[in-house]
Length: 157
Image 1 (cartoon, one colour):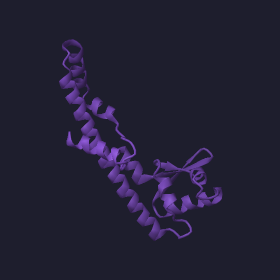
Image 2 (cartoon, one colour):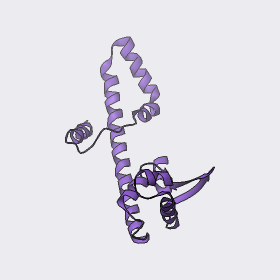
Image 3 (cartoon, one colour):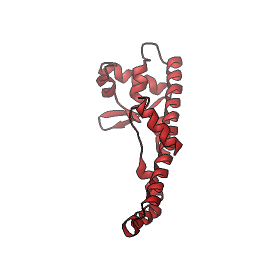
Image 4 (cartoon, one colour):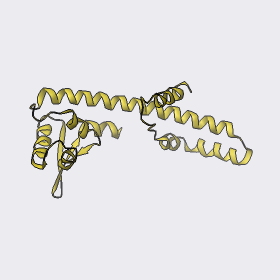
């Protein structure tokens, strides 16, 4: 319960923009208990066990999500350091790293839309990031997508 209060405090202090919880994961993992307790609410007006179950699910999900976010931030810091060390100065930018962490894959148009580079230059930047092992390309029809492999692996766990 204390962790839930901490999350609410972070939101209130504007240190966390919004709660990002995938509560369904916790419920699905224990769906028999969830439905049993929910049935008891309907049949016996037994709200407390169901509410305690839900509060526990919120707490577990909040802890999991917080740890996942911290891991992603660590991976982003590691990627930033690698990019600073291995990419030419004309290629590296904080905005470029942020763009490849918005989702597990990127494409040249994402860099263009973010105002980082024009189309040809964006493609070159992505190839350079692939050459140092940050991204991995895959041809999809006429377009080349670039997978942030470490981010994808982390999100797939």
